[in-house]
Amino acid sequence: MYLLKARLLQSGIMSFILCTLMTCWVTFINLGLTDAFIGRWMNAFLLAWPIAYAIAFAAGPFVARLTERLLAGSRQV
Image (cartoon, rainbow, N blue to C red; front, side):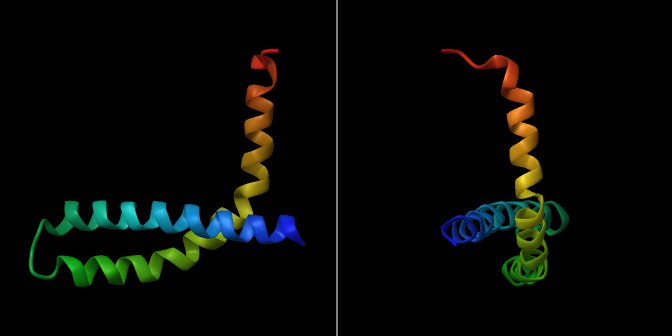
């Protein structure tokens, strides 16, 4: 149960940070700093975060295995 809670929390934190920064950046690129910026950014964030969370949670085990595989030959004692 602890591992599931840890995965849920880690996915939430990671997706929140990435989604916040990416939606801010893309909204800025598309609009610039206009009066509508904050509202459009928040709308983009609210639409994107649930999907980002689901993807981070679902892809987490695959990413962990891939990372282990890629680093397997570079372990130092």
